[in-house]
Length: 103
Figure 1 (cartoon, rainbow, N blue to C red):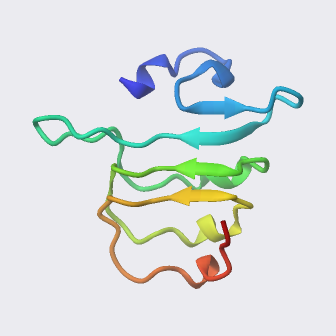
Figure 2 (cartoon, rainbow, N blue to C red; figure 1 turned 45 degrees about the horizontal axis):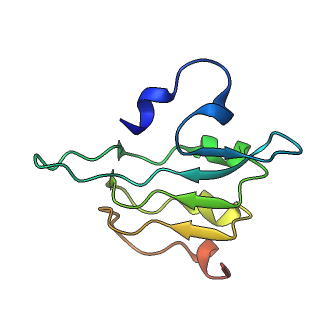
């Protein structure tokens, strides 16, 4: 349901995407999954490294999804003020790049 609005070129109108009123840059991705009766989540697999192209991103919520690899180290290079990766199936160690993350 969340991704059904993701059609067309104007991503600032898509559900879960928030852009700066001044610059139009994407500043927030609020994409938490929703558990349904059959256990289906919104997103599965890997977190896309495309996120590093969002230079103005400050808020990232990917909680309650089905991501199942290690937490990608590139997340530590994002200049985030808020990060929520809870309730996923991440495995392995937390990347050292996240050691300096402060919210």
